[in-house]
Image (cartoon, rainbow, N blue to C red):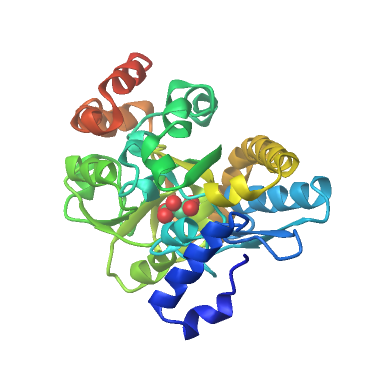
Length: 348
Ligand code: LMR
């Protein structure tokens, strides 16, 4: 029995509950939202960045591939830039089936699957070339994410790992050493690892949804933030920040997820087709991400109102030594001591 959304506002909770029970008893109900009466399926894919970023373009590629290869039965609707759901409500929307697909940054899973903070560990990568070796489906980190029990229990299935790239620091003052951050308030994603990272640099933090960052910077509610160039430029954050320090100190990686009930409701050939489209979109994302960040960096330079400071290896080392291995060890019980030990072996 398909869901009738318009009834939701009219019917009381008790009636909705009995409708759900009857649907379950019928055994034919499509769950996770997205299933139509006529055997058609709609994947609503919500995300928080603009369509021209590494995630935005990969989402469009996924839509293109599904609609080209999976027949007429499946439609993908992509909602970028927090226009449908934002950081504050998208996880709930995925679990309830209000949307079927998301690709949030790892930090956004902190409350429901804290182990995913592994991707937030500061200085996990020294350069973008190092990313695939660590954050791919067949690595120890990838396996920990694909096989994450907490996600499975919430009915969230992992389809892929996408990149944005490495984070830079922005604020209105030069930041060449951790001491320069003292007293500044940085917006962070809701991750304990990120709070600890800034706290080791003696900076203050405020967790905040991505869509609110530009206004908060403009109004001086926060002094700075951390993101890859593509996110900074596409949200115009640089227009309200005089300085960017190219620190490459952390990673923004995305976990491409689907509501598992919805996925299981697809016929096997459509499941395979969606999975293939997801794999190809992931490969496409990895091909374009670094270039898009370089282009965004150049666009910020060309605008000429933000000073970009590239840290020397020695300067970067001072930031790194303040947080590695200290912050990594601090969260070893959440991330898994074995995984942390394994990752520490690769540190230079
Ligand atoms: C952020 O909140 O800073 C990023 O996770 C946004 C994104 O999805 O890239």
